[in-house]
Length: 133
Figure (cartoon, rainbow, N blue to C red):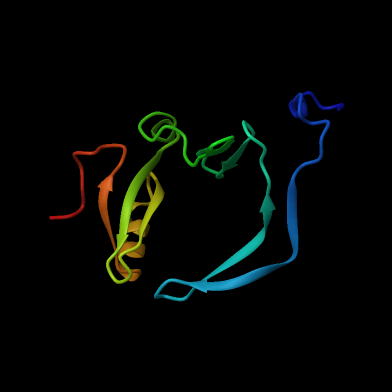
């Protein structure tokens, strides 16, 4: 590889991303949010993919031989990148989700929670903090 920023001992193999020729659109949530399935990423054990936002926030996802590290340390790296982790309950379906909230977007997050009948059961980066009364 000519570009030093692209050097990695694993770059000799193909990027294991299968883009969808046409992103599949599907509707989720009580407010009918459109999501687009853009493709699939395949990771071997001990491979990582990093998702980045324009703000500089980063989110790592790592495959292991036993499963996945689904999030970086919630009170370490995520916090350093201005991200918070919430355990959220859908009060209608009783399904739970782990959501990552970027600092500065709390108002948008609160609006989303209300619209989708969600409540924060616990902020995982600060167990003593909660939005429940």
